[in-house]
Length: 230
Image 1 (cartoon, helix red, strand yellow):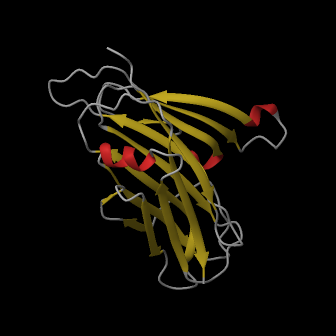
Image 2: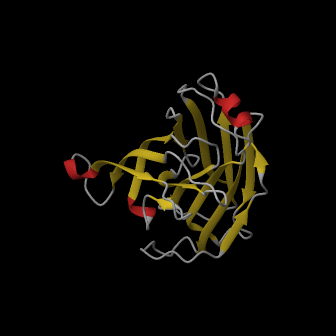
């Protein structure tokens, strides 16, 4: 039986207005086997990343890694604590015979230039470049949702290594069939109690269980995330 590979390329353009950038800091993959089914092949994630504890220019800062979906129906996740990492390039290589993969991209926000105000998270996920991305979304019945967790506090409170979320928001499940999702949500209710740190996780799920098409055409998912203060 031939190995079928679906290549999912991620374009990661993340910004936070004029004051703070969101970093792509974690990713994961899962492929649950239906009852009584043995999965042939594996789903693999390959990344290049920076370990931010090392200064720029230090060779130890620039690294690569990969993870593969296991057979225990558990998530394979790159980092247990994502705050110290910045993913610069990523692609999924799906060689399982059937659709059914799940995967996520996570973004870290650290408000190092904290100012009072009303904060809004805006997210756009688009498929369509290169040719075939929307076909992949339709054939795989690709759906998804967003999970946001933020630690709120005063602008004068210094950042540390802790993360205690006091704000949680989850989107409804939506379809990628049309190739574009746009969402926005407020993060804080009062301008002097602001987001200090946030994790934004974007989930994708191949809801079809049919066989993958016999193609290796790259598919691209572009995710743009911003945190804006008004």
